[in-house]
Image (cartoon, rainbow, N blue to C red; front, side, top):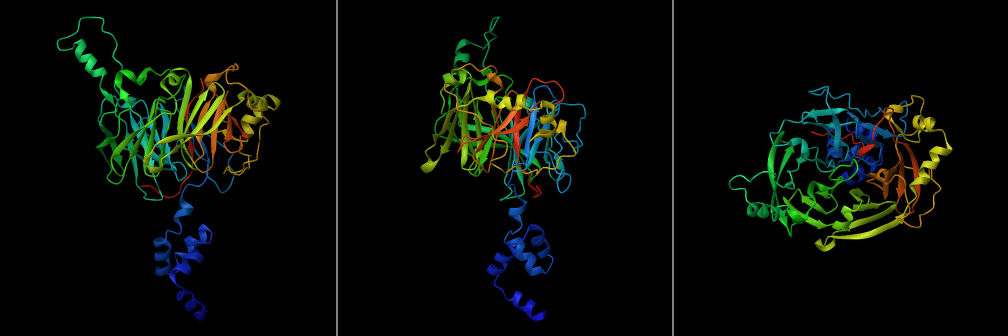
Length: 455
């Protein structure tokens, strides 16, 4: 025994790390208790970290237009080995109980939960049920400001929350005489102001310090345009969020700005750059819905017009920002609904394949981690013409992006599907309609669980 222990102790660190790295996570954790040298090796080589990081899609959080709490849509959880994700976040003890709450953002396992009525923000981990209430921030019209969460557990256990500045609102014609100093010339100067400004001031909360502070991002390159030329708040999407998601990728935050442009904020250099949209402004006005998100290979821009789906990936080689067309196809969302018509609507609601937390069935015993590319395939052909009439075009949009595959989650008529870009396969997921009546999905966030604690 002593000879074997001596032989193990004599192993070079690289060899021992390679051996321990092949063990299951529980065994690696147990090896830390063998001796101080092994503990230092496991921690120094970060052998446990990959097992604590996000690596799969568990489901997604859904905000509804007229529901005061979000919901969780996922495969029915097994009765043992997995704690159910609480889509209504009842483990959080909020400051105000009777308020309107939404999921504001998600990043690598952390969720930003928002009290819309009282402007309270909570950072939480739905898997471990850790949560914290962020300190208040005294700014004007905080409710109108979009917030974004940045968390990279491969780099640090600390996270950041970014609160966007207000955008210039389009001025309405005055119905009574202008006050002193409020002239047409002043109004014209305001309308000719470039946006975003050369020095863009945001408010950022750092978990490392526990405080909010102002942070200025300096623009590299040209602005998106003049205030008078940009749509700002004039976008008339049907029950849809204004910014249409964001993507955190390789140290930068990519923000969707109504389809007119994308802002790339570098958090390491405090600079930002405007990326030209792959669709023109006329398309933004004419019912082309667009979204950005992160897939396995990078940042993607998705545009939907009626039944046509166009997907582009951002090419950043040699600092040249270019959207490259990856997928262009006319879909048939009506075929997705046929799965429901051919089956039992209420049984699908309760049994899945995926279900809302409203319809959770305790007898379900499916694997909670969705990874198969071949389950529940819908037999659907490609459409011939995107100009063909589609009865409910406002219900066809993007639910989210799979960060570890080339898969986009789509919805139409309260049916959710996974669409594979490489093969054009469509997988039926389930029905998004909750028990209580509603106007439909407002926005949603793909959830990838992470058990590495944030601080």
